Image 1 (cartoon, rainbow, N blue to C red):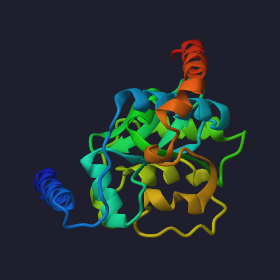
Image 2 (cartoon, one colour):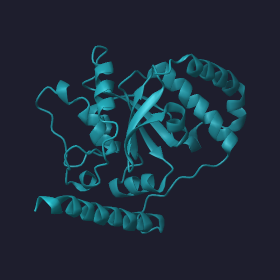
Image 3 (spheres, helix red, strand yellow):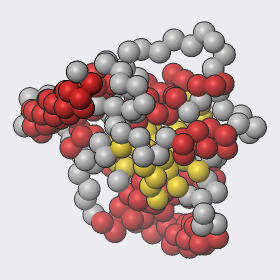
Image 4 (spheres, one colour):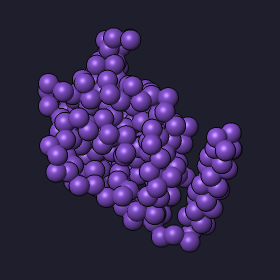
Length: 236
């Protein structure tokens, strides 16, 4: 019987991926209501990246959650299924300018700028359990989970041990600092993470961020400042 378990697990995961594919197709075909978002002017996009990056370097601290609405079809899927215009979350390290996130490929490290670049909207949320004393410890907890598989079953309410979806990961790294009376829903939605922390910054949707003309006056300075900050970051 034991030899059959890996095959059964593989079969279940294939079914889950198929269901996700079907839902994505339905979402993109307009069967679900919330519209997708698209990248538009690339020059404007880069200017907005600089605005957001500058704010992150000013406000965020290691262990904060970067809660986003992304451009990918799976972001549209999450937004449609939850009914909330937020779809993803990562954990930031402001010393190395890296983000740990859980996507379909599993838990992995990403470059901060790349994470911003794929975000249509970005919020910084400071977890209620975070403190200056434990923020780096929380990051180290996240680092331990890099390489873990994605929890496809968890996203539909069937938690699979030792696998993580994005908001499940964000909560899990603070587990040792829970006070003991926390109550979480069966599925933790990225768009509801503000219930477990404080919003420190909201970039707003990119369509609401400053126009080209308004941004031209400040973006060049911010680009120079943020590039200098990134160059100064240590490489681990």
